[in-house]
Length: 181
Image (cartoon, rainbow, N blue to C red; front, side, top):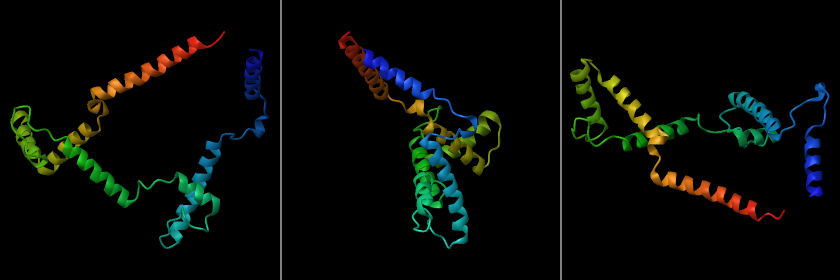
């Protein structure tokens, strides 16, 4: 028991050491690497604009900074990545097109949904909606349906979450009870 208390005391005392205010710097690895990656990304942007289409992150002239920058860089802003994101979103949205309207009319797909939306807006609200606006509003609704996480949570997900919680909580209680005093 006394060894545990000594280890605890040493751990707490080590975190309470005093430093002069002028020497306080980032001691975390994340802070140092994060700043290095920002500097590397800034340097990469300026060097890639002057060079002829290099990839930047894997160049041998960049050194350690471009290697670290390559670790933190994502390709989500490239045209290919944006095209993939749009394709994925369109697939998710197509899966969310309902089979029928609230009135019971059968829907054949997104285009049919847009056409029925235009008619419905005119009948119910007296609102004249053009094709582009209707497509935008239907796509907005479909995207909301496709990305609304609570609507996609199944009973199996809830059962699995409850089982993991009970297993972790139960094992903690079990092993806490078996600890010698």
